[in-house]
Image 1 (cartoon, rainbow, N blue to C red):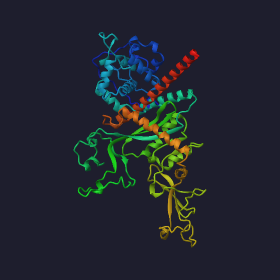
Image 2: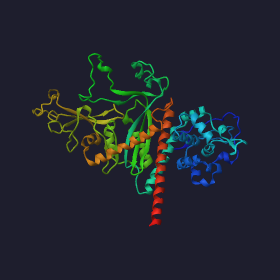
Image 3: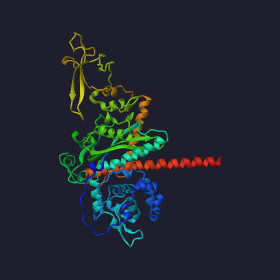
Image 4: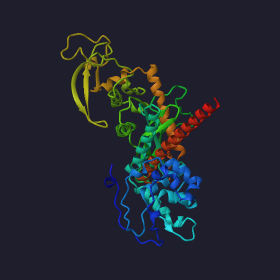
Length: 501
């Protein structure tokens, strides 16, 4: 990743009213440097518990390698670096501040953070620190604009760094990060009136995908939960005689305008859960559309392909099973079987042909390319073996209802994954152990909800995607901080036990 490929260049800014420091303080080292040289910090920074707390929380990231835009030294009004802005946004999330105005107010109250994060300083003789924190910060409007324009690959670089730090910590203890992963999506409600049940809108207007909400031009209509299986008699909706309700008005799902965040998480024994990859898309995208982009990021960050994966039924696709089968060893994907087409189970012959209801291996009639899914793939059409290649005069022992029309047929992807989804033993202990790892994404999503991912007060897809990436970076940094704190506690406990022995 290079800064020139993803970071736009900016022109000269207009002259500002406040002079900026021209001393070495204006070119301060980054957070990563100060995390390794705390004793070189100015006294007013060292004496601030808030500054030191965020230095130890954020400092481990590779800020010194972060791609940066061209900060021209001759600009009259020095622009804010992306590193300073990203660090400030992480503080905003950690403090659960609702707006950029609240963040700016918090930074003004803690000028040591303004100095530490690397904001361009406006000189002031009236301040004991030598700079005016309020004049050194961009306006609220400019901070909001930066959230919309900062490239997401730059924030993904911070997520790369957090995963590398966690991987290094676990390797020191002889463990491996990411052998078993889980994937899930989290719905995000757009900040539009169509999602407000108190706003007066006709049902046809509220859930009409052709009527784009004016409040957010990037959001899309999607379904959070769909009840597409037959309900039991106790759950079946009934139409009362005194107030009949047409069947087509019954609720069969939860619809929202918004986005979805797909994540890959892994559980670290005794330490907690961490995020390995994330991606934000409009809400009308299917869950399986996240699979290949997220797994590509996981492989890039870990340096290998995970052996095991846990998913819900939305990811019951042949390529998911194939992916983990190709990882080698005993790897597999733990996914509940989605009963599509009425096929609850299938058996296959040694050469991979499906076995019909009569117990006969079906005959392969032809192979074709299926272009109706996420990507084009080969499919195989199997037909009744008593009809192909030549009828032998026998009749179907099971009296199949389609016998008069040529007998039973079956279409499968020409992939081992299409067979594995039926052959995997979902009652085995190994399957159950892997499937339990789905709680990793549930716990991560719970933390993300606490940080405000579900209802962002933003009206732009790029801003929401950037905010989500920062949320997961903060979740990883908190996990890293917990791991290091527990290591220190365990070391101190061992030392105390040795002294008292």
